[in-house]
Image (cartoon, rainbow, N blue to C red; front, side):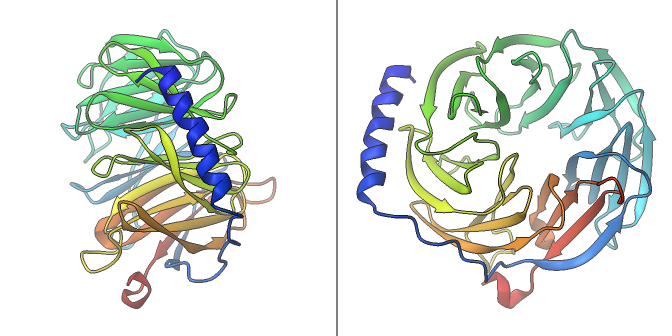
Length: 343
């Protein structure tokens, strides 16, 4: 994908959006999830990652130097492991291993999903690793240092570096298309950076018209759609092949949004697909009615900023970690949907 080509498409997109008229008001009703459970975490410290493992049916919570596992049934605490530093990110590889990125001292830690026993570690020559992404279709593992504006491709089995690329600006959330392309939000340039994952070279940039400080990012690898959350309370849906925004919807939430996408998030008879964004003030839902048709489906106000989320589609649940304040410890909100709401 060439930078010039993508930017020309971006100009075309601006024209299309201007012709489309003003954005409709955000719908504050009709959000398909409701609060079904609160999990009060026993210790202080922000939750940096939530990860669902369908094999063990466990939700892994990374809080400070600890990783805890909660059973999907009943949300009971079943596993605990303390690591030598703050855990900034979690990923699950194709073999089922859990990978944790430790911020300081910078290292990767590989753990057994059933016991959280450490199987091996690798020291990282990277400043403050902040994010991990495992592209399941392409079998690629990526690690991001936002402090160093660098993304590294790693061997999923050993953690050995296989190449890296610098991203000018402020890299944020990552998404892979399953065919060797990596997309990264860039809040400093209001754009998506496009990276060839095999050679670890930047191949272009997708401009995000009228999107300020993009943060939340998720991808539908079948329909080849990118879902981007913006700090100025809107979500963009981008055609990844052509590099232009073709849908823009209002969502509340503010900066530092988190995003998750799944097909049939409420089961086979519910939505065809859904993307959820959570930020400082609310969690919002967008329903995919077809690959070219999407609907704003309301929002739910949050009492604190969402620092991590995971969508557990097999049981129709959305898990949100809400940040602690000076007077309160972090909590996990488990949101569920009734059958009637999911239709």
